[in-house]
Length: 505
Image (cartoon, rainbow, N blue to C red; front, side, top):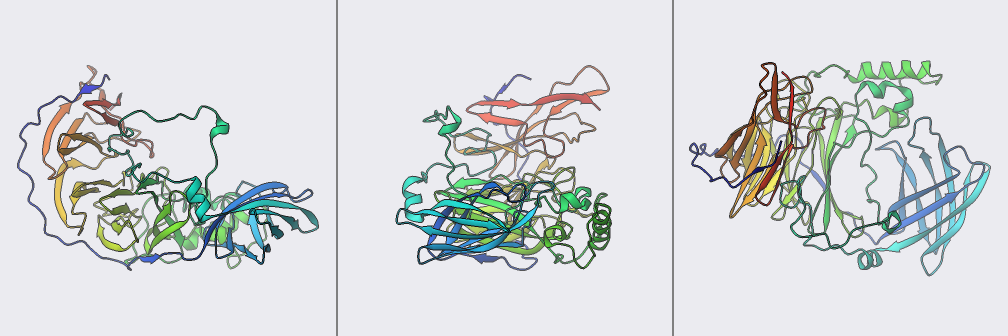
């Protein structure tokens, strides 16, 4: 479909919905905010150990060090630490356990002893069992990282759909383009080691012993945001604690912990592993835990170090982001506040500077359960839209909340389907634009495109999409299907590009 021009008069619409005076809910334990302290440095290590087990002959590790302590992640486990190395009197020493995060990857204990010279270069030995090799690397202090990798505080990508919320970058040309791969330089790895990756948890995949012992758990299907020289990430970490109130599990493909444990042990024995229910390795056990801690993390964009970390204990359930939602759980930043939605379907607000918890607002029932009026278990987008004077999130329909208090400002007529709303800035107002059809990968409704005033949720205009002549076919904005539909609408200047598809009804 060709782009439609947005030179449309903002016509009068139905009266704005009455403002709600409801206060934000504060259900569940209050967030725990941690601000790390100590001298920070980034450590690069390169190992070469001939004769070591497969996967450990040649590899590298990068991590953040505080006051001479370098934590090493396990490689597969999220909550299980691999150990740590310590730098003291010009020498880096210690031992840690590391597992290769690939199917069939082995686990090894590595002993390290390396000397640090005045230039920050490390050189020494690394041993795995009887195999001995070398370890080389460097220690880069925080001051040098800031000097070499300063990030313009004015630059940013504060929402999932970019600086203007319309799916495009800031106005103006890119200053310089990277033309060759060798022009791309690795800058840092985040100090935190519990940011997950890979396929989701509590799914049929995690009963497979090979997957359970080689793949990390999911992180929340989230994109990072950049604002004020900081990177913000929203994710979740498995926990054995269930949120309250406990409810019956929802959806096929999931199983209560006890049954999941039985299946995991059965699968392990079929694979030839001698495992009992009371001796399952922690990295496998956490994949079948039912609860999660929601996390919002602020990272220094120049150094990778943690500025603050807010953990919401046992606020939600450990669900996969694959055939079921929610997805796009990306944070958004505006006017000194960062907003994020967790697996408990709470909208959280934090102070950008220090992570101080401002408020939390329940949007619906816990994700993955019947009766959820906000973010359902059906591909729903859980992306936050943060604008001056209003933060927009899904709660049955798209709703606006007071950024300072979490109080409901308005409820719109635009139902939450699958798409993140695009933002169009028209003179002195922000307009929210989304598709009106409900869709999945099996069926599609006839629909159009609806625009709302972001300040009060009023409907401004509606475009009906031209429909096919065939009675059994329908056209709609494409934004559906297993987390694949981020938006379907992009706004740039006074043009709108809509991805419209036709499908059998």
